[in-house]
Image (cartoon, rainbow, N blue to C red; front, side, top):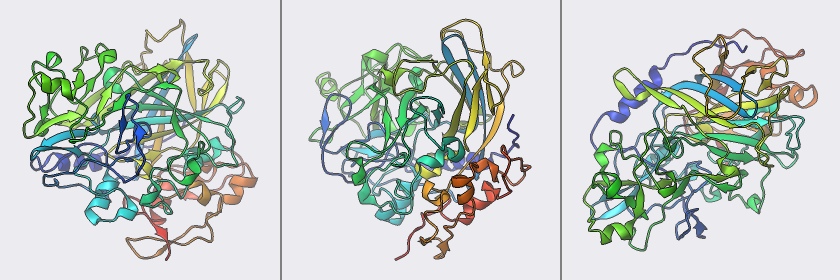
Length: 540
C-alpha cells in the first residue's frame, strides 16, 4: 500500500466561490481558440472553415466566431492553487472485465464549451485558466487570446503499460507521465502560439504505445461513457509542430463538435420536443439548468438521466419557428454513442457528491469499466496473474496541459504478486454487476498524492536541459535546469519514486535499493518556476 497523507481543500472551494460571485459578466464556459488556417473534419460529417479541436482537448485549436458583446470578466491562473491533490484508487476484475474506482475532491466540471446569443450574434464562450491569463495579459506567445469566458470540463485519466506486451514502453514505470511531456508541448518553455497544439507524445527513441483511459466528465460521463485513446510517437507529419500523438482509438468518440455556418450560427440547438418546448437555456442558468448538454439520436437513452435532451440542426429549428433571444445558450458538443475501439470503456456508476452548501464543489467517484482483452491492437490487454505499469492524472479547476495534477509511475497487479495497486479477483463475468467499492476491506484503497508538474519535462529529467536557460517571467531570474537524478534514471534503473516523495510530510521509502532522498515534489517543483504562473521561456 502506498502511504500518503490527507490534505486540505479550502483552495479549490475558494475557486468555486469566486466563480459564483458577481453577475452574468463572470462567464464560465468553454474552450479557447488559436489561429490555424486549413479546414479540418470536425468528426460530425461536416467541415469547418475555422478548425476545431475535436479529439485532443488540450485547450484550443479553434478560432471562435467574432464577438459583438462585451467580454465578461475572466479568472486567470490561481497562484495559490495547492501543489498536491490527494487521490484514491481501487481496482477489481472478473473473468472478462476490469473495473476501476477513482476518487478525489474538486470542482464539478461537468460543462465544457457553448455558443451564446448576445447583441444579435452567436459567440463562443469559454477557455481554460492559462488561456484566460494570456487573454488578460494580451500575451499571445503564452496561450490563446481573445477568449470570452473560462470553464473547462473535469477529467480523470491514466496511462497503462504492459511491460511484457507488444506495445511495451521502456521507462514508463520509472518516469511516469513525464515520459510523454516535452519542452515544446503546449504551455511549456519552447512552445509558442504559432505551434498550435502539441500534446503529449513519446520520444522517437522510445517505441511502443501507452493505453490512455480518459474519463471526460463533461463530454462523455453525462451519457455513462468514457473515452479510449492512446499515446505514442508523433506520426503522420506531426513533427511540424502541429500536433502530437495523443489520439483516439479507431472508431467514433463520445462527442461531436459543432461547426458554424456563414452567418456564425451554431450547428445545433435543443429539440423542443425533448425539453418541454425550449430551444436554448439562458446563459445566466449555466450551472443550474438541466440542459447543460444534449445528444444525438444514438444517445437519447444512455446514462442515468435518460431520456436526454436532443440537439437538432439549427436550420430545422428555424423552420419550426425558433427565433434566438438575448442570452440563449446551447452546447458546442453533441454527445453520442461510441463505436469501435474508441468505445471500449464505459462509466457506469460514476457519481458527484456536492459539498454542503456548495453545489459546484465536492467528491467525484469515477467508476469505469472495460473488457480485460478488447482484441484491439490499440488497447493494453489485461490478464490474470500479470503486473502492469500505470500513472494517473486529474484535471480540476478548469485547467489543462501542465496545470493538471499528475502522479508518479505505479504498478498494478491482477493477482500477479507485489504491486502498489492490487486488483481484486471477483467471480462472474460482464460489466453489469459493479463491485461494491464501499467495502474497503474486500477492495482495498490505495491512497496516492498527485501533484502539479510545473515545467518538468522528459528532457529535464534525463539531463538534456542542463545547459539551457529559461527565464521565469514572474521574477526575471533564470530557472535551474540541472537534474541531479539524471544519471540514476538513465544508468542505474532508478525511478522518480526512488529519489522523491510527493509531500514534505512523507517518510522517504524508495521502492528500489539505491535510491536517495532527493526531496519532495511539493517543495522542488515551485522552485523551478512556472507553477500557476507564466511559463519560463528561453532567454533572449
